[in-house]
Image (tube, rainbow, N blue to C red; front, side, top):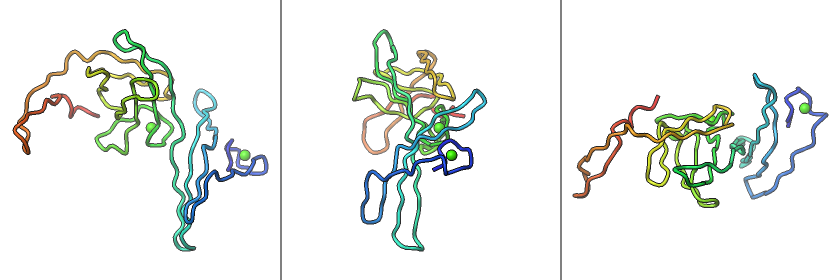
Length: 171
Ligand SMILES: [Ca+2]
Ligand SMILES: [Ca+2]
């Protein structure tokens, strides 16, 4: 792989598979370096090569890149993991469709709660407005005080659920 993007493979080492199955071969995480506006951006990708037949071969590419660190939420230190889930090199993607979102996990170390990047994130049952750097370099959470909840009848059971009124405000 041309890991430094210079157009040459003679300066590269071959990437070895870490697992081989009957039809699948797994590689990664593989380090690659992109040129960015502020300099070089180090990124990692995982690959899965599907080889069923000559007519049926595919290469699947997955993100192998995340940021991880401690964050203080309401006075309590928690683990925060930010994942470029949609593999586009940025960490602040939010969308109605889940596969177009990045992921943020806030919780105890080794057991963080996962959720999609959106207008709000949940931490310990409270909603926060996240400000996430596009390059993933920081996360700022501001308590969301202006979210109104209302009860809606649940169609299957007699229970009702509370949903944020502003949930459709994703842009
Ligand atoms: Ca190269
Ligand atoms: Ca992304």
